[in-house]
Image 1 (spheres, rainbow, N blue to C red):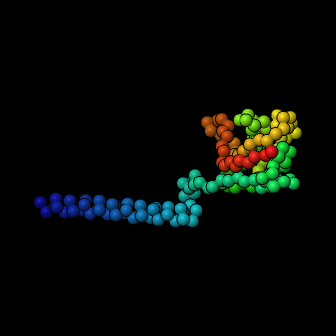
Image 2: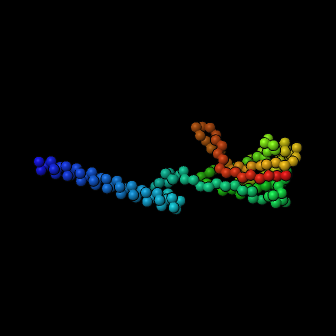
Image 3: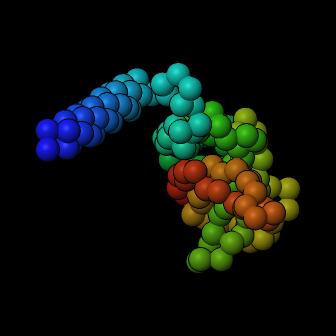
Length: 160
């Protein structure tokens, strides 16, 4: 009878030790995650686990040629300031302008490019008038062997 009690005690002790070890590992992992969240850096050896962390993307009108942003018009040259995650390769900007809901001008380029509103030839350039525009910060990716369009941020402005 005493042998059975010692075996039961030994098994119980072993299971208790394993449970304590698992608890210690969980606490260490939680502390590492908390530190990574606060500092924005992954713990050593855990880079891939933090590869999907988000960073804020943004775009804003940076400059115009000879006009204040409130006075943009057909033919104005505009540029944009943008911020995006360092993991984004080849970010781009597209400028789309609409009159009465119809696309009258569209152009895409790199984040450091300038854009002449209306371009060298567009419906807007032909018709004139005011337009409501959107600048989208985006990049192309791949998913299941197909190209994807991934919009990061956008800003809106009007041009007379």
